[in-house]
Image 1 (cartoon, each protein chain N blue to C red):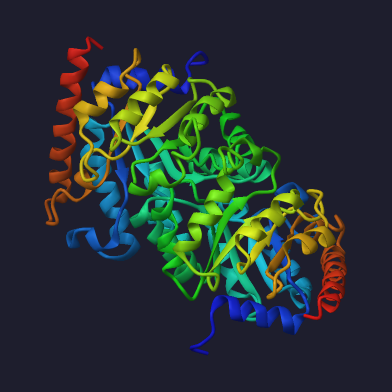
Image 2 (image 1 turned 30 degrees about the vertical axis):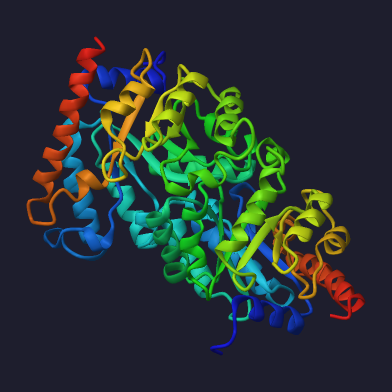
Length: 273
Length: 273
């Protein structure tokens, strides 16, 4: 498909699956059910089971690198196998939040896009254009830039200045890629901020963390962030991964994902999408 | 040494070695001399040879994670071996520029401090206190926070607002650690900025990239950033690593490091340190 772009493929997947769910893979060692096993092997089995049980309900998976790097090279090797086994109809977002000067950023882009085989990577904007352009140069892959994050201390710096920093990030960075391959992280915990960023970037997709355990909800996020292409990937991690501490964790994860999927299907119907 | 801190140990190393040199390990595949070999094995040999040949002249080594992650899990495994073999009298700074929400940041801290065995890790401030405190909680390890970076596009966001963002980062983050375990990245390419950050953080160590290939020079940096504890770790990467493309790369690196060491020794003498 030479004419396809990361965006056209994502929109197509959303239409086909009637879902804009991203499942975050944040395997916290203390919360991995005993039935999955222990150590890096238990973590890998847990992630593979979650992927298999939720893939029908999701259009993307987002492994967070920290939870693999905590096992060192063995964790990276497990991540490589997990990504390799992911279904072809799901986008893989390496949640790495990398940011470094140009020549170094190119190495990170190659590590995640070519090496790991991810379709998207999250990037931190602090160091400016140098640190973002080497990612957006990969036009067949998504660059997912941090804008307004969902954590409590986002206010420390992301609201600094007038206009606030995260708005400047969104405005200025639009020149560094196109809406076909540049997405923003905009947290669900600040619906007012989400609506404001939507005004600044009407055509871009947003990756929205913070629904569920962090307090955001699907309806508010969808109302504030919707655009003509849906424009949203709503992430859930803990609410799906740890839906049950027992041996039924995969089935419980499936049901949690199915529940979010049902809500998304209803919203997509309402929007005649 | 129960009473030692990361800072007291670094000051002691600077006094003993008469050097405040940090050697950056940024192994660019295209620039690794053929004599070192190819692939991840060649990269590992190159790094080990550079470490062995420059260790007498440096108090710290700073591997940048991007150049290891570009080889995937095999690159991480090589980095683990390289770090494991580093001399005990040198600080290992994992230049990872990580930044994520609290619970995730804790995993990164564990990955680098406990897993990899680094004494320091670089951290990005964009997401605020949540993303920094899990690192500074490791009081026996350094957190090295990005403040004013050396790349051209640092001006995109680091100067946003009034006072400029990087100054707000330095002022606010001082409450998140102490000068005994919190250091700032302040680029050598902006001596005026370096002097200003020194005014804001008189007691903290600065990790200063940008001397050499990027245009900064040792004398200007030392004049602008000096404090009562020296307060500077001056990094050189390319000027040392790629001093010769030939089979004599290790000896050429040693001479390049020795030259910087000589300049530092002279400045330490002048300062009666």
